[in-house]
Amino acid sequence: LKAVRAGGGDIHRNSLSDSIQLSQNHLEAAGELGKLRSLKKIEIEPRTREEAFKYVDMSDIMLLDHLSPEELREL
Image 1 (cartoon, rainbow, N blue to C red):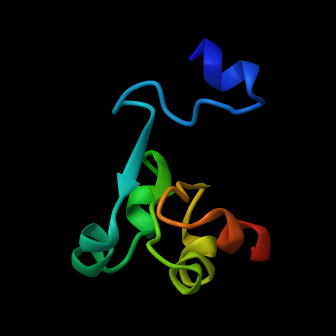
Image 2 (cartoon, helix red, strand yellow):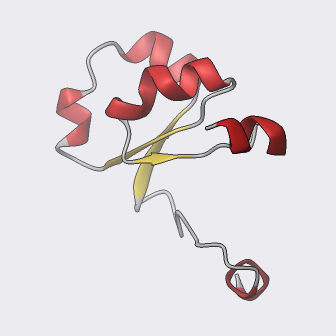
């Protein structure tokens, strides 16, 4: 945690009780997310830029670890 903060990063989740993280598999199975949003923050982990744009309005947090630095600059 200290190294992340020293580098200017932020901790997006301390435990599973802080938010709900949805991978592509979850998104394909979940359908409507409205009910989930009222319960917890929604964290989505897109695999591509296209998925990031597709799901940006559905999420409170996006985990972008599958994108390259170049793809992140394009966002």
